[in-house]
Length: 107
Image 1 (tube, helix red, strand yellow):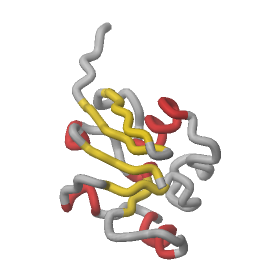
Image 2: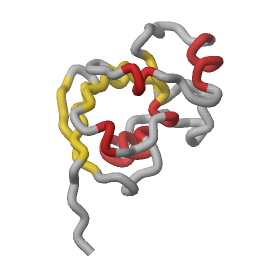
Image 3: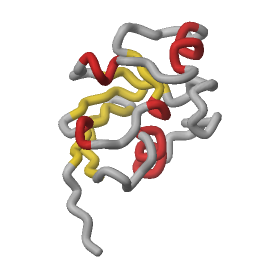
Image 4: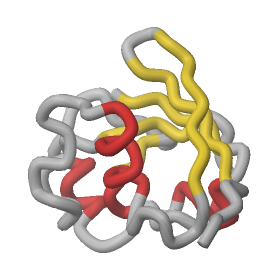
């Protein structure tokens, strides 16, 4: 079965801009997508529970909905350095069509 890649995400990683395509249901969350596409060392150490903070990203073109923290995310981010109002944990962002056009920076 062919799937239509209808979600485009721009990722800034190590000073480079890259675009990735996905579709709803291909990955559970943004952390899994980023790990699979870029294999970022030590990324997502807690496997998506929101406790380690290693999948810290900044949302560059945000909607209020994407800035709402989920689960353990607020507690984890409050313990970290270099966190601002656009900070999120990629493991807490589920892959769906609202991510189309998203721009993020991997911290």
